[in-house]
Amino acid sequence: MGENWRNISQAAVAVLRTGRAREKAELARRVAADWRAGHLLFEFDVSPSVRPNRPSQPLLLEPAQMPKRRKGGNESNRRALLHAVAHIELNAIDLAFDIVARFGATMPKSFTDDWIQVGDDEARHFSLVSARLKAMDSFYGDLPAHDGLWRSAEDTRQSLPARLAIVPMVLEARGLDVTPKMIDQFSKAGDEVSSEILKTIYEEEVTHVAAGARWFKYLAKKEQVNPDSWFHELVRSYFKGYLKPPFNKPARSRAGMPVSFYEPLAEMLEE
Image 1 (cartoon, rainbow, N blue to C red):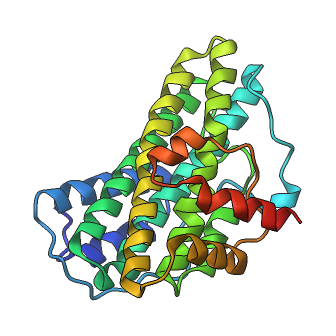
Image 2 (image 1 turned 180 degrees about the vertical axis):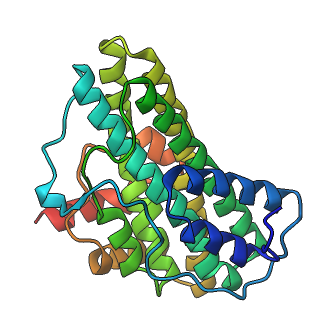
């Protein structure tokens, strides 16, 4: 149990305030274990900062400055892909604990249950990818990364429906579209260890997108609005760019996102 953790908001903010990547992942898992064991009260008396604490590396670049996306052929390119995945997973730890600390007081306890589980999963994913990078004579932080994911969190910090629409239902859902191809690239290169890690991440990310869709629909019902049209409105307001096909329709359907959510929006934003 954390020495100064009385409740879930204090523990979640402790994760956000931890700068070192490995320590953040380890602390996230301890907080999740404490929460499941009933050691933390369902109380909220600490607010998160706009930005979480982060390691001094990697160097953060503008998305347009990032090197072109690499394919998984040679080991150098596979390391770069895994580094990008590690960066996403580290961001995802903070996103999960931020949504709890920032919005949990306004929602049922099961909302916190869901996002603490997501944070636990993301921490385990980061640790798996980080260990794989180490086995490939690399480490998280040795390549540049971009800050686009957290900027989306900043943009939605005052609106839970916008946060749910943009982060799990747009950005993480995009991961469902692209990860199967990455898995195939690693398999074709003979890197089955990395491929299996990505398969684990992929399957569990379906449940994370599902949590976002489930709570978005909960809010839509509460507000008595159509979830499809509300989602379209929020994406137009908060998301820069458009939803890029092809879409992984089976995975998105498993996550509770029918095509009526995203296909009309992609067409609208492409015009």
